[in-house]
Length: 122
Image 1 (cartoon, rainbow, N blue to C red):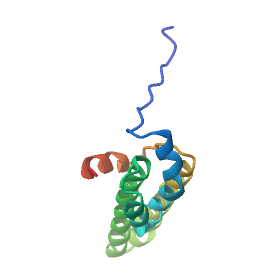
Image 2: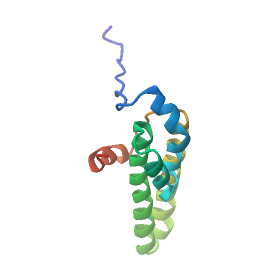
Image 3: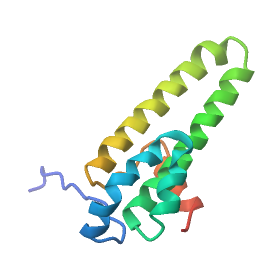
Image 4: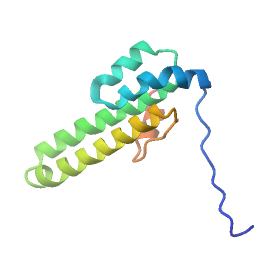
């Protein structure tokens, strides 16, 4: 038993299976830039949609920061920061869309989920 590794899963945020079913049709929009406004305004009481909206807002902010920093810094920003950062944001957005459509409470890596939980209390 000492060799066994126990996998500890994070508990899902408060929300019923009904919230997941109703919310996953709109929650995926949270990862498409400013379109996080649509599920935020239409699914105000849905815990699943709000969970993904919070992460979508932070990911959108990451994308804006990558664009600004990548555009301001000559050469390194243009050829390294902007392309690599944009690819990372794109991959995280695709993963978020896939997981939200699958009905999963997926915590986005690279500090996105941590910042979303810290910054937003709605």
